[in-house]
Amino acid sequence: QVQLVESGGGLVQPGGSLRLSCAASGIAFSIFSMAWYRQAPGKERESVAIISSDDNTNYADSVKGRFTISRDNVKKSVYLQMNSLKPEDTAVYYCYARFRSATIWGQGTQVTVSS
Image (cartoon, rainbow, N blue to C red):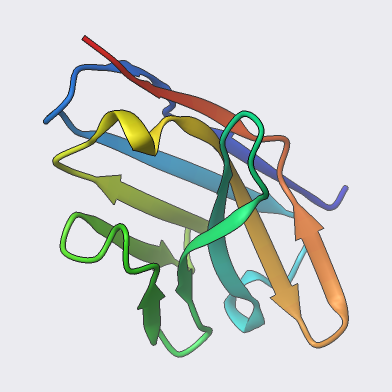
């Protein structure tokens, strides 16, 4: 079964940290580009961080220097380390995989940054 399963979301205070994980199954993980997107209430889904199959990374300006994306091809997983979290980071975070025309979305995990 082809799927992406996110975990690690939750409630954290401003300035805190969270690490999101995304486990893939049913795909040749190492050839896929992986990404994290997020969608806040009333806003469009936006790209947060991308990591290519050869480990090149790219970040949204709003998270540069605070978030780090990484991947483990053996574990078929991608991670998002989020530090110095702000209330505006509150959103549902989605894992995304792409190889040529094949795309896969996870179900999302809620991240809430609030005191």
